[in-house]
Amino acid sequence: MQTILISILTAAITTKIIATYYLKKIDRYVEKMCEMTLKSNEKTVAILHKLQEGFELED
Image (cartoon, rainbow, N blue to C red):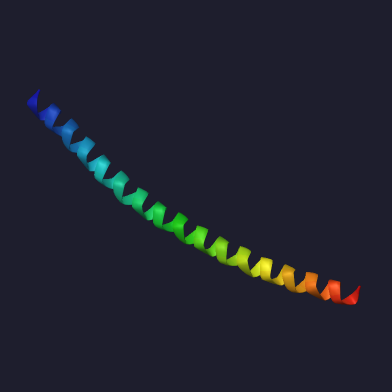
């Protein structure tokens, strides 16, 4: 009985460690994707402003 309880406890601790490790990896990935999206959005807005200025000059 004691062996079963120790096995369950070991499995729970190991699962917690692995889950924490992968969640940190996922958080870093999501953070990088958010940064890349923000940079892309900033570039898109800059291009749109330039295009808008060009159309205003033509009018």
